Amino acid sequence: MERFCDELRWERERRQISIERICEETKVSSRHLQALEAGEYGSLPGGVFRKGIVRSYLAALGLDEVSWIERFEASLRETGVEHAETTDWTEFAENVRRNRVGIESKTGMRWVGVGMMVVSLVALGWSVWKFALHGHLVP
Image (cartoon, rainbow, N blue to C red):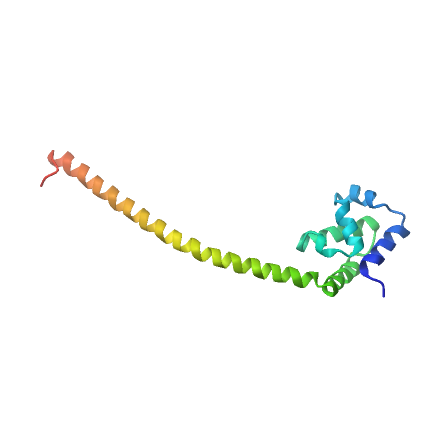
């Protein structure tokens, strides 16, 4: 069985459609289309963007999206690109969690400052009220 990328390129060549024509129609960079045809899936943007590029390519060639997308996903699993992305997202999520712990403690200190400011404003208001009512600050 041929690789997905080879079959994709063969379908494009069979239909005599140039990469440039697909680029014009889909607004996808030629380097991304060439990476797709070369099976260099790691060079493509990740997630929904990669799948969008494949869908645009398939539509430009007039190929059945459902069966070709299934084959593309199988090809991704074979190359391990999908697993590497999952690992990257896991690492990203862990970094976000670690950084949020530091942010939460800074947020707690911010509330202490807000509390002190409120107490200061209440004391100042009381002093102004006392002065206006009695004309002096000493009781």
